[in-house]
Length: 320
Image (cartoon, rainbow, N blue to C red; front, side, top):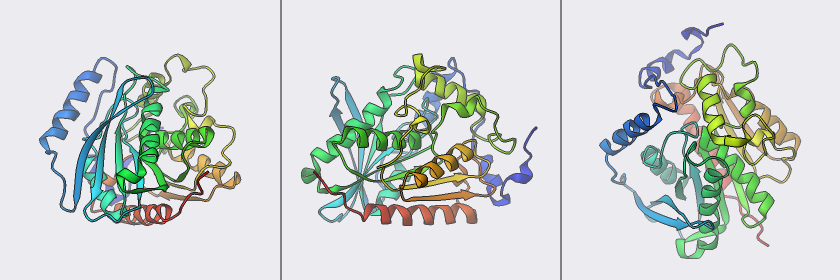
């Protein structure tokens, strides 16, 4: 059964024209990545007014260096909150350069130091590589909070799509390792469940932008040898059996996004585990619908997201 455009919010339809149709295959992956890099470079790398962006390379425990962009609003108060951010791209695509402007805007509006992680991508580096890169940055900002001018008690994680899945996994990993107290997880249409691409999906989800077939490829590359077998919760957060003790969560997704049902189920499980959870499902919203920037639903989603992020960042963890 095919979904027709009448299910899309009319104001969001112009956004579909801004999203190129991608024949996502392993063979085409290098070319697609280069196209995305060229596009990012064509937009320039200067900071927007009011935000200063710097680059760091952070040594990981296994000896490689993780690239991270630090977006700091001008005049940020001492002991400000910090936000570790993972970009989207289905685990196969994307970079910190692609989300530079969006990250600068988020840092400015939320009043935080935002650390955007250029994690290694599958299939070259499958799980746990991308997650460990994010954890390296999380641990680094915690251990160097004073030098960075941030409060070690006010560190949150965030991401969109595949990056939202990594942020959820990062919250789980931080809880289980007990080294960093994360105060908030901000998940924008997160990619949480490898089983979505094999289960019977709603006929009203996944037609636009990110399809079940693309999802299958992304997850198979992320999981590598684990694909089709026993998948740990740190790889696919929806698989985690115990969600108790996780930081408060914000989850937002469009109603015709492929991830709508898995995101709603994760929110339900968080609430049942006693985790304060805010969930928004936007009628007529496809994956990445915020590209239709002038649509009323996009503006509403943005305002609610930033408001929730500011509330989340205002909390303070109790450090050991």
